[in-house]
Length: 305
Ligand code: NCD
Image 1 (cartoon, helix red, strand yellow):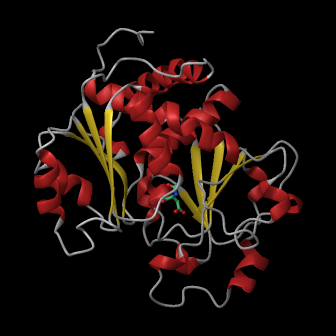
Image 2 (cartoon, helix red, strand yellow; image 1 turned 30 degrees about the vertical axis):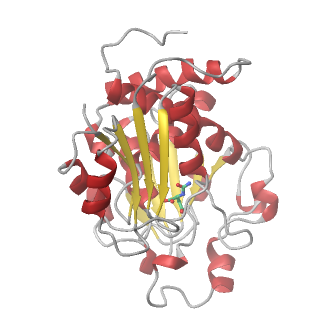
């Protein structure tokens, strides 16, 4: 595997291999010196054309913990702001002969395009509304740790599915791991024909009790050019997940950043059933495993200390 653009690039065996390796990297995170020499002498470029806290910081840490040299470029403060095109920027950065380029872009398809322009391995860190495969992997990792396996689990993805690349990647990844997925949200925020991905769709929370896992999405107001909902208050009344809407035993997830008081209530975010903190922690180990898979190879032996 050269690139990670979409969850479709991965079969179940590949997902499991990456997650098993992430487990061994998570163990390294518990050591005093959190580094392995796997990528010593190789360069990883992080190219972020859209805002990011978790994804950019965890990719940076992941590459550093593998001992790579890391260059992080953000659109603000770089020549991208001066109008340099993606193609020209990549050509410039190619002078450093990167082994991998991690890209986040507001445009669906940007990562795939980039893969055609460079010899480096490309990792999609979110392309518009399309996909965010490493988020899906870290979510599967988090759930696998908690549940042992995803087979037969019922996972509800609730909220702004229409604008969410996380939803798309997670539907594919959860199903590949044997879970049943239901998406739920106002009809205006559920993409038409979403069931073609294999999931169920419903406009109400009535049957939320069936879910083992409630995965809540952020209202992506920056991607909304028109009014998709009457008001945030009304949205919150009908779809906000608070502790009162969860039954005992259900687990709660969210990719972050959370709009507190919109899609999630404060009590839910901080409740013991929330895996939000674990999701963030999983990010570094899982992204280390993805870089390792692409740059060292699937056939490589277990992680060297
Ligand atoms: C997600 C993203 O950027 O797609 N966030 C993330 O990577 N942790 C989800 C979101 O922005 O709502």
